[in-house]
Length: 69
Image 1 (cartoon, rainbow, N blue to C red):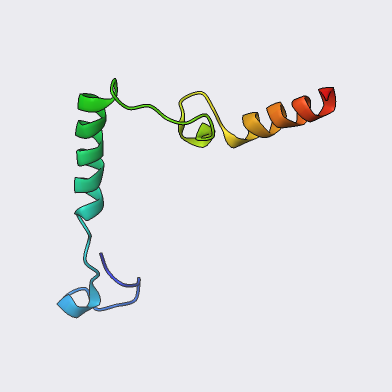
Image 2 (cartoon, rainbow, N blue to C red; image 1 turned 135 degrees about the horizontal axis):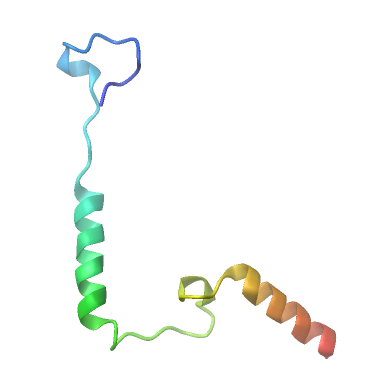
């Protein structure tokens, strides 16, 4: 990738490298998750990392609990 729009594109020192490590990490995560997902479990406080859960959902639940008490 060129470092900016106004550089000499024929000079190799005007380019940035593209890291492939994130690609390999994502591929490893996908393979690992598919193989071991039935054996993995999360804690109740890890709501931000669960499907169909978010931090805003938990904040709403905590607010409702504090109001009812």
